[in-house]
Length: 408
Image (cartoon, rainbow, N blue to C red; front, top):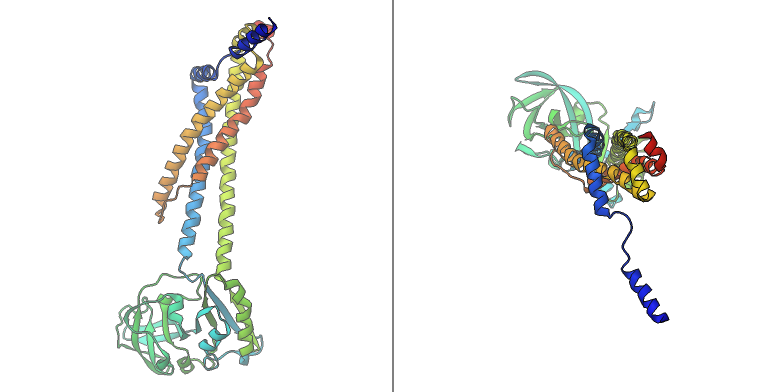
């Protein structure tokens, strides 16, 4: 008899019917309540959608901007050290002359160096058939053409055999109206054009624009300058050794001329600084999107509080008929979450469309869609709905049935 009772009790526990509405019933009820909210639900939905769209769009725009900035500087000499040379104050005779500098010897001192070049930079009037024009003179020694990524449109570049020659190579902008074999006069000497460079966009990492420059041998600069001291040394290195090479380069140059004032510029550090600025910019955009999302969350809370106030009678009746406070809280919280989820879905679509429109208008090279932006946008929207919907849900669950029916 005892065993039969135990079996019956066990069987009844297995077939126990759960108390309260199912999740599907609560969800359908939440959707129906949102439908009855009308314009107020639309306003709360729009606030969440705007915040989510701002998060998605701004993250993708920031990612594309960072990628575009990296593309702008890619191949522009980010793996080049540029040492600016100046005589010590009051000691002009401490400059480094082209004849005292050997690019191959410096490359032997710096094992990670791939190419080395030196320049003498000055300005001078150039007289040609077209008239007189001010020109930037670049006295070159070493592998300047490779380091700067220059290419020829016509003719040839200067070599070691042209060390004391009167040959010049014109930048693309300086070659307008000129051709190979033309002669120009600078100072008391006549120079012959043996090469014309192809167009090259200006590179902010290098100290001059090759399109508006006239190239000649560094040694032949002595015909135009009384003391043609070297102004820059450029060293191209393997990409993983730039920071470590800055100090050895400075030490090697000071060994050649102890009185020099050497300032080594590391473009890789500049690019790292630009990358950090891009990260700060992205955080700024995210904070702006967060403010927009906060406004949407406040809108959800206001709508839900008004919803609770208008449905006091319904809440009182359900509690009087045996509904648990948990059921009331879950329904109102689910209404806030459904409203936020719909806003997040629309916001993700609008944000992706906005990022695409910005890409089209900005004429960038590549469109990038970050999966993290969608996850962050949707996640932050749902979190906002949960946070701002929790208080109205708890307020609805704490309503006393008698007072709710009397107030109604």
